Length: 220
Image 1 (spheres, rainbow, N blue to C red):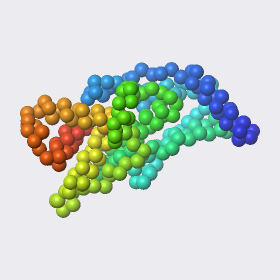
Image 2: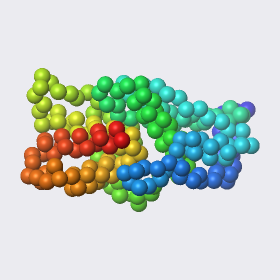
Image 3: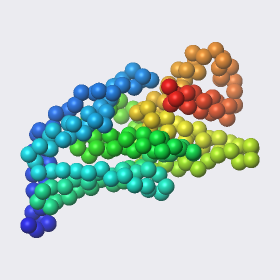
Image 4: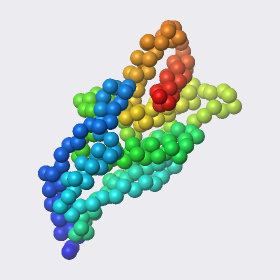
């Protein structure tokens, strides 16, 4: 079978898949947003069920891209046609453990598998998060993975870089957008008496407060 015919068979199979796909129930919960989402297991089950009788199968590959954990999805048809996504990488915190890497890879697999096959897995915010500068829920690359304390003197730029690193990490770990994380931090600051003078503090101190709150959110 020629390559063109192979792809026609794949596209035809995808059309059948779409007809058979049933959107799964949101079986995971996010305590900070009081919202639900579809877990990786839920996405896999929905996709595998809809693939039955189509001749389609897929794999998800894990690797590193620019030193970051990355995932891509590859679709195959029994007649030979293939289709692949790009590599999706996520930010990794300094001193990350193997468990941290595993958690990020699971998150990336869920998001990419859902996007690749058209599974609705997250709450629809009507584009509000995407319209805010810097609020990428699933960044394709991350530049905030190498900062640290240099001899005990942290510059304003280093402090801001660290803040963004923790912000992106928190968003990835908790299935939230950066804007939603900021809102959760603002809520905690507003309710905690120890931050009563927060509005009078310098930007660097505010960033450090936000970093502390976000780290507490991840640990809970």
